[in-house]
Image (cartoon, rainbow, N blue to C red; front, side, top):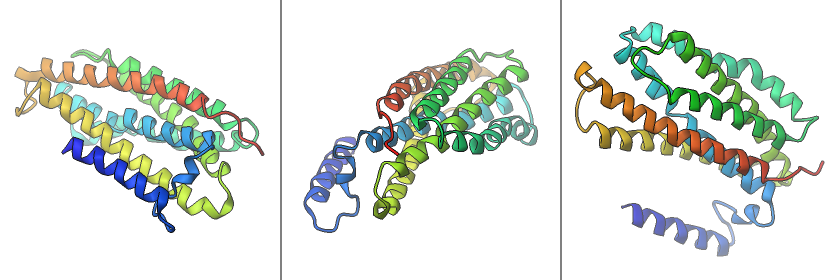
Length: 232
């Protein structure tokens, strides 16, 4: 199925390059490094961060024994940080080259993910909140400037298509992120419930996932920087 999916992707690209009215205008990627690498950065960012919610929520409820409501309150530290700093980052990207701010965002996210690789049975809640704040701050610095970069790199008549591609890459990254975690859990734990007997396996799965996400996000820093400056 994977091989078939990859084959169809290449067939789709070939078709879109030659049809008169493409669903996905591949010409947007030609000779436009800002657009191409901005889209790639989105894919990497969401692939590295989306499943954090899933892992941390399970960790708090199963390993720490916290009820769902309290776990949600702890988890909300990330989106609150994003909500507070995203508008500021967006305004900054109008004055400073977006790739600079977005790359710093990737760096902060990488630090947060790296810290989460040290999760263990007795990790403090304060440490987890600190990690989530780092990730939330990183995503805040990344998202608005990166969107600015995408929309500023194309002609006005392509705004709708560019926005659609951006949304598609966001959802694709989220799917990749959950796919990575699901695969890791299947390999480490198999078809078992998360009980005290399997806490060690869950923690090892989480560590493996966060290492992969950290490496992905670290690579995303360079993808973000590679887009170059936006001509205003």
